[in-house]
Each structure stands twice: as structure tokens, then as C-alpha cells.
Length: 171
Image 1 (cartoon, rainbow, N blue to C red):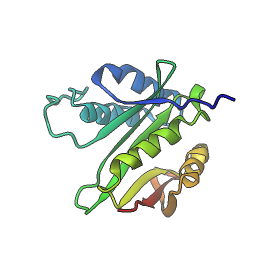
Image 2: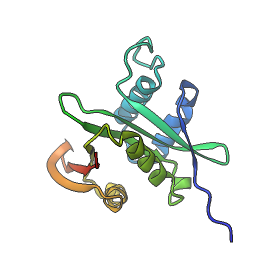
Image 3: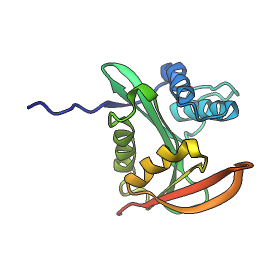
Image 4: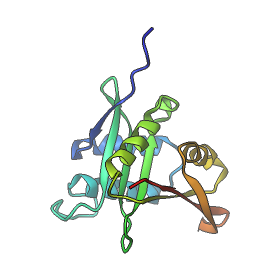
């Protein structure tokens, strides 16, 4: 009996920019201004000049990782230190091509981020939307041990709450 082979995880490079934006757009949940921010954060993570400038030589505040299936990039994750905290990190972006959902790609990305943060992070936080179309996203995080600890009504827009998830990592 042959087991399912998971995605191949790899660090992202500036050559992945077009596909990263495409994956993020394909999720269908992000507003255009959010896509602009995702693109900027991606470029900061890979140390490349982004659409808003920058030399690509600044200290990288973010880390990015991609998931490939059969040679195709199908998902990405981006995380970074939370400023002015001790051992708190934010998961900023996680997006998987809808055609690759339920294939373990998002789980593999989250688990690898957590593995890389082991011994460096004591707490991971995630801010996400409270909109109904984000229900699968919130369920995904909860199923991986993240706990919804706060809800800020109308944070992103009227009727679009901010839901904050956290997970403590063992030191």
C-alpha cells in the first residue's frame, strides 16, 4: 500500500511573485488592497524590490515558504516577529490554490512554520476575518490547535470582524 506523498516545501524567491499573487487572488476572499499588501510582504520576505519600491537589501522582517505539488507552486505562508514583543510571532499570510485544497498543503505549511519557530517563538498569533466566507479558514486554524481568543467587531469593515487566534509553542 502506497501512502500519499505530501507537498515539497521550499523557500520562496522573487521568481515566484506572479504565482504567489495568483494563488492569493484565487482564494476569492481577499480585497484588492489586501492583495497589494500580500505582494509587498512577499517581496519583503524574499528580499526583492516590491511594487512600492525598496531595494531588497533591508533586513527581512518576514519569512516565506511555498508548497509544491508535482512541480507546481500551490500554496504559500508568510510569518514574522511581532514588533515590541518577546517571543511572539505573527502568521501574516496563508493561501492555497483552491484546486489544491484538502491535499494537506496548508497543514504542511503551518507545521513547517511551527517547526522553524520551535525554540524561537513562545506564541503565534493570527488575525483573520469573521465573515461567513472565512468560516473554513477559522475551522482550519482551530483544527490545528489555534484558539480564537478575541473578536473585534467591525474591525476590517462594517460587519467584518477581526478574529484573533493564538497558539502557544513549547520552548
